[in-house]
Image 1 (cartoon, rainbow, N blue to C red):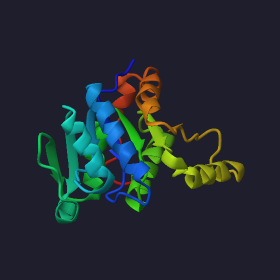
Image 2: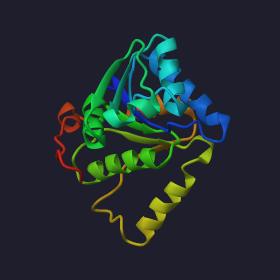
Image 3: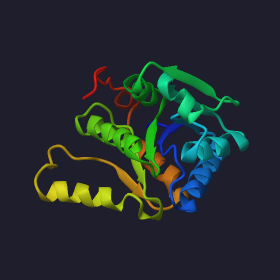
Image 4: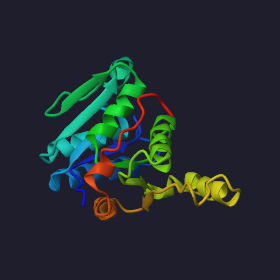
Length: 200
C-alpha cells in the first residue's frame, strides 16, 4: 500500500474568469496543510498557483515550488517557508515534479496545465508509473477535455489494451480521499518506476 505524502498540483498562473477557481485552489491548499500533505507545484506566486501555495503556508503546511529559470521573473516564485527548486528548463521541471510527488491533481489552468496533465496521463498509459492522477473538474471546467477523451475512445484511439487511467472530482473535499483510495492499490515499486529522461 502506498501513502499520499506529497501531491503535485498543476494549475493556472492566472486566476481565470470565475472566482470559484481561486476559492477552490485556496480550499485545497488548506486541506493539504491540515492533513500534513506536502504541496508540489509550479512555484509561482500569482494566479491559482499563488492562491494554492499561500493557503498551504498560511495553514501551517509545506510547499515545494519547482520553476524553470526563465519563468522566475514572470511568475515570481514564492520564497516564504517553502523549498524552491529552479530548473534549467520545462522538461527538468516536470521530471522533478514527478519525482517529488505521490499523486497528481489538475485544477483549472491553461495550455501549460493541460500539457503537464496530458504528459502524466501519457506516462501512466505507457506503464511508466501508477501514481494516481485526478482531474479537479471545478465548475465543470474540464468538461470539454473529458468529452474529448470519450470521443477518442469511441473512435478507437484509446484501446482497452492501453487505458487512460484517471479520476475526476467535482468537489475539492473529495480529492484527497479519492487519491488515498487510488494509492491503496499501488506499491512503492510502482510509484518509483523509472520514466525516461527524454520527453515522450
